[in-house]
Image (tube, helix red, strand yellow):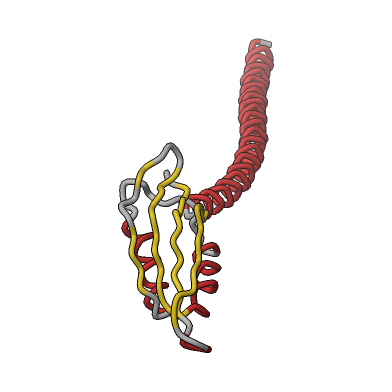
Length: 178
């Protein structure tokens, strides 16, 4: 009988060892499953969070692009507004523009020294030449980009007949200045 007990206890120990190995394997599988599922859940949460962050960043980017487009429009408008004003410290470009216009219409031009006022430059102007060219000269000056106003304006006709009539304009010009 001792042999039977040994066989039973040997079979029992084999069964217990096999059962323990299967239980350990099953425990390892369950642990690994839990571990990878937990990691997968964390990865899914990170992915979802990343997608939300990307969506938010894309919205902010679109908003910034709209704001940038608005700023560009404002800069363009400011540049156009800036052209209305003569730089009071550098009125030379405006004076050159007047001289060029006078030359193109065969008119002589004399300018007084520009005087700085609070928001403008003022200067005395005398223009002489063919009478028929004086009015177009004034109209051209008034259509300059810079805002120009004629004050104390006088025009006189003084010599010649027909197309040879000559005249003179004497006025003060006031130009918006920055």
